[in-house]
Length: 357
Ligand code: CO
Image (cartoon, rainbow, N blue to C red; front, side, top):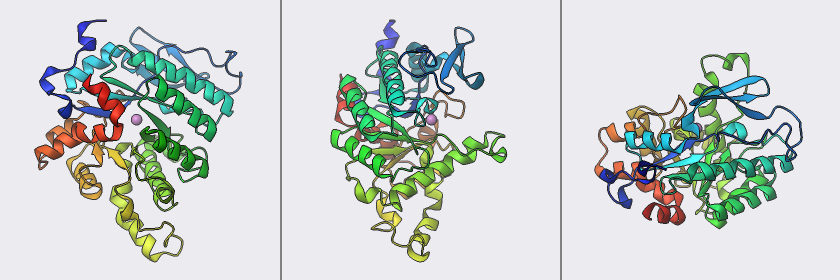
């Protein structure tokens, strides 16, 4: 390990002013061949990694190319160099959703989760103060998901990333609510990421699944927690954050509020109007424009928006945090909160202790 691996940028001051990127992803460089492993049945198309060069690889699903990736997905030194260049002290390192395996047999999915979660710890091990691992769980099986998040908490994961749905079950599903209640009870923060997007020929061009599908999916899952009564059944101390600025939600809150008051299908489906629940969740800052960031702050509050870049994927923000750092009209306390203060609250005491070490 080089010295740079273990260092923290001294120019960024003490723990109180750290810049923390809460939305990044990893892919491990190696995992067992799941199609032939004794650990998992040889069924369906398992993801595997085709190594193209020392710095490039391709996630494969069976014989199909899913995504080209680079070594910044698994190489701690490269990640840390990018963080230094961007002025980022710590990253939350979350799974890449293609590995969630929610559609598989729960026993197989639990094994996949253990394999990938353990590999995440290896990726983050060179810099425990700067690379903060989040786990994945077999969310299709509430008991198995609760067991895995507990195992991961003991092993050093600091939170959990979940997909925004499990097939046709959205976040207000009773099993998913039970899992979220468990996360609240053991103090594990939850990061919700859109995945498994609707497919159609209309969405199969110019990244339409990412450009329209992801924002709509995230909006829908926030509504599941609001209009579906999810938040009414969850403790207020659940720490939960949605990716990509919460998708379309902030822009359409007024329409949702109008429906809750005036449209029979939506009237009083939750105990309170939608705007009542705005202090129950956070969003990241990956929205790219100042007016969008301002809308999030004005809608949800300056304590509910956190730096999140989607590093290292191509739709992510680089340099990470550039929008928050450059946005006009933010006073210093708000900018500091968005860069890292809010993330420290979201991540909780275990992470803050690690950042201070
Ligand atoms: Co992402």
